[in-house]
Image (spheres, rainbow, N blue to C red):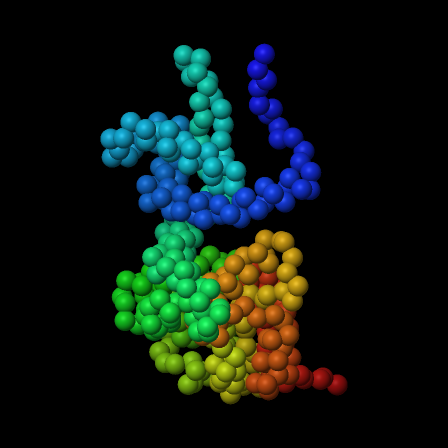
Length: 345
C-alpha cells in the first residue's frame, strides 16, 4: 500500500537544513523572475480586484487573461503555489461539485506590498528596476571588477549608473519611479513613529515627490532646485533621505559640511539611512540592508551601506558634535545631527 505525503513537514536535522538552505540560495533567482512575470500578467491584481478576502482558482484567474494556451491554468497554479511558500499568497484546498479537490489562492501579508495602493504605490517598481536588463547584465562582470578594479556596471556599459541614467531617459524613468515609490512607503512609516518634524511650518526639498504624505504635516512644501554638494538651502531642520549610501566618503563629507553651514544655532540635520552591522546576523533587517549594499557595490563609485562608526566619523569631521539614533523604519534609521550641545543652568 502506498503511503500518502504527510500534511506537516517532518523535522529535519541541522545537516538537512543547511543543505536545503544551500539549494534555496542556488535557486534564489527563480522566485523574483516568476514574481515579475506574475505581476506583468496582473495575477495578484486580478485576485485583489475580485473583492476583499477574495479567493480565486487558477482557472478563474486565466479567464481574465487573453490566454490561448490550454496549459495556462496549470502553469499559473505552479507559480502561485510557489508564492505561498513565501507568504506572498495563501493557498486553500476546496472540493468542487464533482468531488475534485483544487487549489485556490488569496493575497497574503507580503503580497499586499506588490499591489498598488489607492495612490498607485507599491514595491513593484523596485522589483522592475533590480530585474531590469542593465542591472542583470552587469552581474556577469562582478568577478572581473573584483579582481581588476572598477565597477562591474562600468565594465559593461562604460559609465556608472547615474552617468548612464543621465543619457538614457528610460533608465532614468525606471530609477526615479522606483525611488519615488520606495520613498513614499518608507516616509509613511517614518511619519507614523518619528515626531521630530512636529512644530515645523515649512519644508524645503531638493529631491523627492512626497507631497501626498508631507502636505498633511507641513503648511507648505516647496521644491528647491540646485546641487546639494555645492550648496544646501538654509533651514531650521534639514532632512536627507537615503542619499549617503549613493556616494563615497568625500562627497558625503562635503554634503554634511554644507548642511552644517545651512542650519542655525539650535537647528538639526535629520538623516534617514540604513546602518550596516559590523558583524552580520541572519535577521531580516540585516539581510535587506546587505542585499542593497551588494547592489550598490557594482553600480556607483564609493556607494555603500555604512556601519555606525563610519557615520560617527563623517559627522565629527563635518563638525557636528552629536549624532543621535532615534528610531528605525523598516531597515532605515532616523538619525539626528546637532552642531552644538547646549547645557542649560
